[in-house]
Image (tube, rainbow, N blue to C red; front, side, top):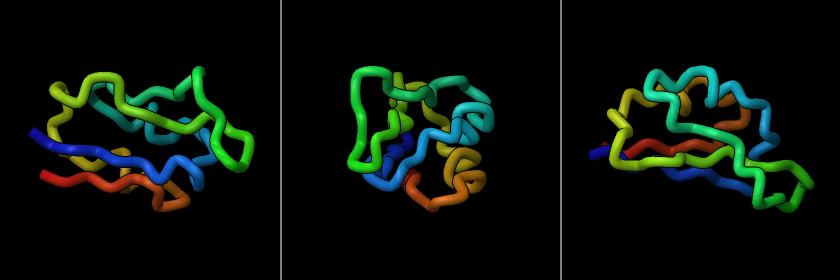
Length: 68
């Protein structure tokens, strides 16, 4: 199982990672706001993550880390 972490304080909620995820488990957290005033990205079901790192590759702010 892979583990995905986000540096939520740097995330600007651009949703590129949401569109890149083939399993559709990355979403924008509607219940949190980061230090910059954006809703950060998060993973809804870590068990479903296949560790492809598409989300981390497409992130323009390099806020996503994928560990296999």
